[in-house]
Image 1 (cartoon, rainbow, N blue to C red):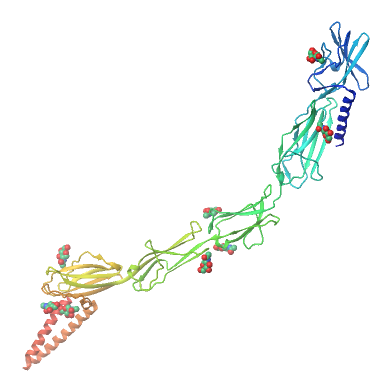
Image 2 (image 1 turned 180 degrees about the vertical axis):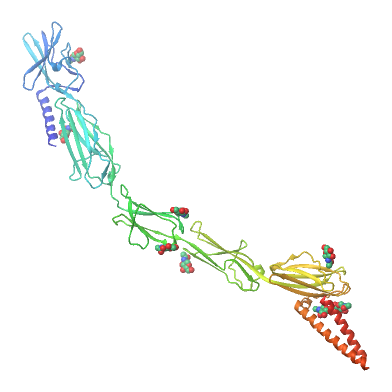
Length: 572
Ligand SMILES: *[C@@H]1O[C@H](CO)[C@@H](O)[C@H](O)[C@H]1NC(C)=O
Ligand SMILES: *[C@@H]1O[C@H](CO)[C@@H](O)[C@H](O)[C@H]1NC(C)=O
Ligand SMILES: *[C@@H]1O[C@H](CO)[C@@H](O)[C@H](O)[C@H]1NC(C)=O
Ligand SMILES: *[C@@H]1O[C@H](CO)[C@@H](O)[C@H](O)[C@H]1NC(C)=O
Ligand SMILES: *[C@@H]1O[C@H](CO)[C@@H](O)[C@H](O)[C@H]1NC(C)=O
Ligand SMILES: *[C@@H]1O[C@H](CO)[C@@H](O)[C@H](O)[C@H]1NC(C)=O
Ligand SMILES: *[C@@H]1O[C@H](CO)[C@@H](O)[C@H](O)[C@H]1NC(C)=O
Ligand SMILES: *[C@@H]1O[C@H](CO)[C@@H](O)[C@H](O)[C@H]1NC(C)=O
């Protein structure tokens, strides 16, 4: 500061001298040629012209002379100016390769026979400095700390200049504790050129992110002041974290059981913090980790608040994680076999992270909740209970119940006379599961009867027909059998000549089960045996004694014989 103040005074001094004494001044650029006009009219009767300069102590040194008469010129042996001078006919002195040491008072002397005219000229030399450079800059600046920004260096200036620092084009002025600028100038004693350096120390803030720091040198040229700017420098600004943020990274928007998730903690400082403490739901102690904390195969009980903080436990961020899940319980499930007429209660209960409803399907068709108080064959099938969490991609569950309703065979027989009058049709209807095998035989001859292809009726019933043309009354027995049992019914079909009554009421009357029939046969046989015994006893009695009641007794015997025959037929 003091030095630049002094410089200002000096410049002011020079300016005053120049105006006050009316001195001619010649300005030249360092290294170029200095042309110093004589500065006075050529006098009549001029003998010769001469150039000298004045040393600081006032002594004069002659450098060149030119004869006006002989038109010749000569140079004095001044080593500094050897081979650098020319003196033109109008007495302009030219000095090539201008140096700082050429800054002198040169005097042009015109000599006439009776006088010597002198005219001094001040020579000024200017040397622009090198482009300023910012050196020793750090790799980063830390906010809140007085940090070295760099040295701005500009060399080889004459006269010396001033270095100014800029931030985003604005001049940086010293501010106590915030901006500190120290400068240093040095003059090379040989060349006379100045070396300038200015050191900037600065307390950066986050505002300085991306700020451009530069310096400029202001220096004199013959026309006045000019400036030259350095390249600008941008620094990485380090600042502490002021806020932490926690993020959940999951494969899908919603998290479901079994997913792998990553919690990411981010601090907004620069450079970003690399380590954090992660707090799991309900846990006081943090887990030290890098910025990513992974949880694999997450469970429903992992739902909760997750937090993270810096290692110093300040600045806590928190986020809610909901782990969706979906369970489905179907009772009963899998393969279930029930008897026809049984009751079965079925339940399908979802358990999920949200309210869900279930859909029932049977054989790919939607149905309402099935409930069975009296199972029928038609209730057999594949039941599916399905549910899904709409919000969670791919979270759906399905349970299957394969219900089989089993039952013993039940068979019904009916008959009719066909329109042609030459045949009769016996029709059977059978149900039961597994599907019963049906066989019909004619009791009279014990032959299996041919039946038509079975056709399926509704409700798991089948029917088939048997066409017969009986010569005489026959009894037909049809039996249906599956692994669960067997049912037989007989039907009396009268000879073809006798039409069957059309009433369908005989269905029930015609149907007896096999056991009854057998009981009937056995009872018939016993009866027959009894009658035969009785007849024999009467015969014995009658052969020993004559009776008055023969006809009645005979008639009885004939009746019994007939009954016996019929019973034998039934047995066959
Ligand atoms: C003197 O002569 C030089 C060339 O010889 C010329 O450039 C210059 O302008 C002249 N100066 C004056 C003051 O006539
Ligand atoms: C240097 O700064 C001083 C004041 O601080 C000023 O007077 C002087 O002209 C400046 N020099 C240049 C070359 O800018
Ligand atoms: C979760 O990560 C484990 C390994 O870390 C991998 O075996 C598993 O397949 C991943 N699960 C999912 C759903 O991506
Ligand atoms: C969560 O449940 C799993 C079993 O599904 C168990 O191993 C784990 O300890 C439970 N975690 C908590 C925090 O209860
Ligand atoms: C879920 O169902 C329960 C009762 O079944 C009810 O109290 C609750 O409000 C429901 N929640 C939603 C989100 O519908
Ligand atoms: C049943 O049909 C077969 C031929 O399909 C025949 O040979 C057989 O005699 C028939 N039985 C009766 C009792 O009509
Ligand atoms: C055949 O049955 C009919 C009744 O269906 C009966 O009237 C008739 O007497 C019976 N014939 C013989 C020979 O039994
Ligand atoms: C069928 O005929 C027999 C005699 O041939 C008789 O005993 C039986 O009761 C008859 N059954 C029905 C149901 O009419």
